[in-house]
Length: 324
Image 1: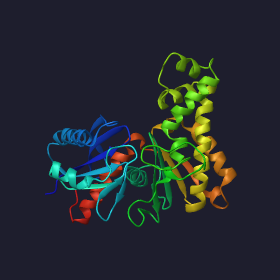
Image 2: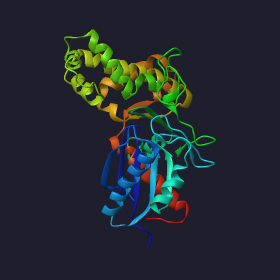
Image 3: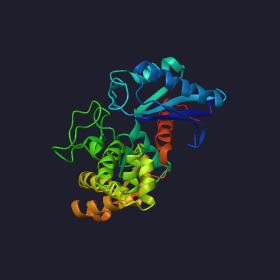
């Protein structure tokens, strides 16, 4: 008898979320860890510890582990070639974790995992041409083309956050050599940077007073202020939405998708973010694509990457003739 569950692990630039997931993609026990700033050994130890906790909660009935990692993966070798936010460069992460855990391990890019989840059980169910954009510490992208996850020739496709939208823009993050990337201008990191700038320009706003009081200007707090009507915070979120829309217009022209699904931590801003993005797409994208595409929020929230990683593990097992 095959084991009854897999473990899905979403490794973001800041946090790790792991959970026991059944064959119907129902999530059971969940574990979260902070991974930002860890060296490679500490990161691997933290990942292993989180998985072992989930594994114990599942009674040991675990068939495999699926990972969504913030990295470019060379599918010929399984090597994590470039990871902008975590210490995963030049490591065969799947092989290392399989040896540590004694379980089959399947890996993919974290945004690819989120795309799979939203396509199977989220906002994009039934669509065959989908662009998924995840906004967190960085910007991830996943492509569902012809109803299937598109990985490209080597497995490195869909790096939508590293498309340049401002040629002389700010330097991108980590190991990305680019300037003016979508990630440099629209991510949660960019949101915090722009919030600091606008807070100085609007010192009597709630955002300005928060900066003066030494409060960290992070995404959830800025979003809360915006929903409460603070004009400075609204200005920050709308700026992010407009920049995002410039990028989305390009994706619309390239892929002619039925749907663009926007997820990640920043999507809590809702229409304050998506409204300006839609306006930019309407102004910049070409017909007929611009009049056809729907731009919608993700449905699975922060669990999309974890659920998708589990789905990737289930697919991997099915290819080996094992079904839960």
